[in-house]
Length: 113
Image (cartoon, rainbow, N blue to C red; front, side, top):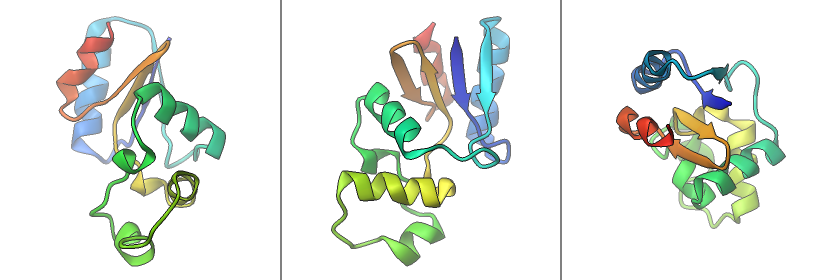
């Protein structure tokens, strides 16, 4: 099953969702702003993406600049920041089995099927 971690107010996330709808593959939508991810869930996504936690952070968000920018944070602290402030999570994220991508650009999603 394909899962998209989606923010409907984000244009790139909406474009990613459209790619999945056009693919005719079964998928589920997780609106992570409405249903925030746990530390464990977010860590698993990061591991699936094969990236460092900081690579998933939207560094231009006001919450990042006000609370975290310039601080020496451990990977766990960065994940905790994204759990506390879900707007910091880059989007869309699409996971299929043991693979995942950040859909920027959205066309990257096609590599999963």
